[in-house]
Image (cartoon, rainbow, N blue to C red; front, top):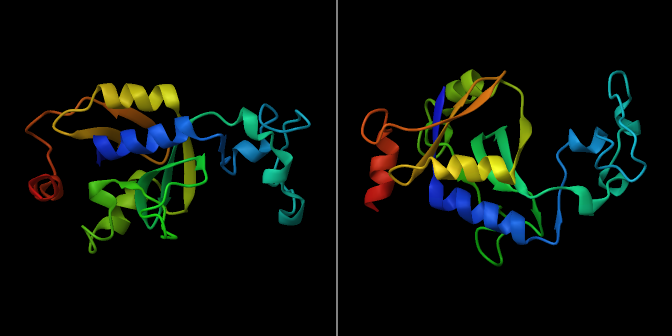
Length: 175
């Protein structure tokens, strides 16, 4: 399914990640030896939740700059930089770049179906490294970047500047 994100907001999130002194790992990165202090890969199959690694097991200097593609209440990009990038200085909400098609605020009646069809029904986080996000941004057009996303694969697409343009982007761009 094709998903559209505001390119300027994606870039702002990426710059935050790049500038951060430390970055938060995804759940998947907690198990990967290249990020762990002990250097060991851990198989989580059958591992009780109480035995799962935590952020304390990670060498924070090894977590690369990039963005998280999150699927939960919609689908959105967010920075992995610490401290997190908030909507406003006193806010407790992280700044995110939502996919127009899977944004509960823009599409309250259809976001869940889009989320399930593109990301899957379970909540989750995918790490997209800095170089891949920069590639995505190089293909921006009309102020947006596009991904083709299914539960099994992710692809960067070059959007047609006129066709396949969600109405919600026309409204947002006009603000």
